[in-house]
Image 1 (cartoon, rainbow, N blue to C red):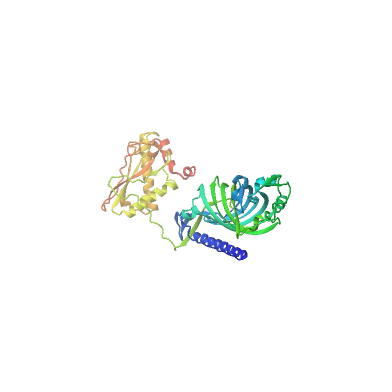
Image 2: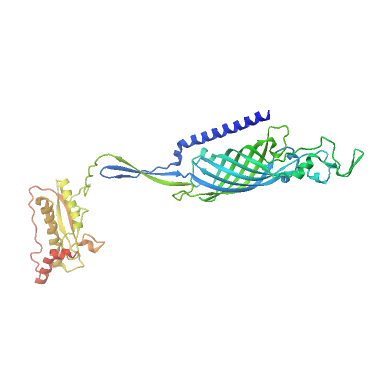
Length: 463
């Protein structure tokens, strides 16, 4: 009959562990709550690229060690002192967390156990019986456990969560050895102490009548066991955590050397220890944010139209496009030619508008009559580029130049070495004329030569 009951216990543990593993894997089917997605769309000529950032769990190995106490719940231990019946125990463990919700581990334990034979006649037994027949033995145990993290099942996984409560269910076995054989032999054949009992004097060392003995099997044996427990885990860092492990262990009734009208016995372990999490090949321990780039082919994308220089047009308003010049120079650099091109695009997209090309010189360089002719030449250079290189209709252009009489930019003096553009309505009958304000300004030979050299090829190469 006991053997049949033991088989039922084994089957119960097997079904329970199988159900726990199935439930844990089912929980991992949708851990979308662990995923944070951001989309950075990058347009190219043939693809749209989406960068997806996900916080993923690292299946990490861990090792740990614990120390605590083991309390046997075998025959008669309830009659003894709790602290006297609790013996030291030690545990090392190796495991892996496969998902935030589920992991497995292997535990190896060494436990010192204490059994007890209760005697109603202890008052007349010899001095050895003062502990009521307590005897010691040792156990070496090993279990394979499935671990479930209740926090990550009930709530989304958090990368930096400090505390978590975990449950586990496992199966294994242990080996009993090192029984206190001298005490066990005495328990089988107890003796009197020097006393008078029921009016009869008994000599110390005489055997008690038959039937008072308590048999303890002292052979070393293997036993099947199963256990269930809770782990309170506190995270110190990515590498370390502390935990309190409480387990209830069930096994054969004879594990403590006594079989007494029960199918199974049990013992409770309470242990405190530390866990160390090992790095993976990428140097991560628990979780990591990864980036995945997904490319979707969508075919050629036509080039985006160039933006208009001005959205809302007002007459006599200055365009925001400016052509700048080096000090005392009239040639247009390659960088500034892009600005001239912007003005040509503006005129192309606004056929009802014309521009006045207006040259300037800064007031802090040279002197008025020289600056006047310098600004005229700058305006003429820009005019020539618009007509000759970009094909702008000359009827839509007119020129003006201010020298240093006016300074359009008051904040930075150097900005006034420029050509700017003013908007005016288009007049098809308009024939542009350039009023030569410099006709009455006479430059000496040195000044004329200096001005004529400002646009030479030799001068350009210097810049």
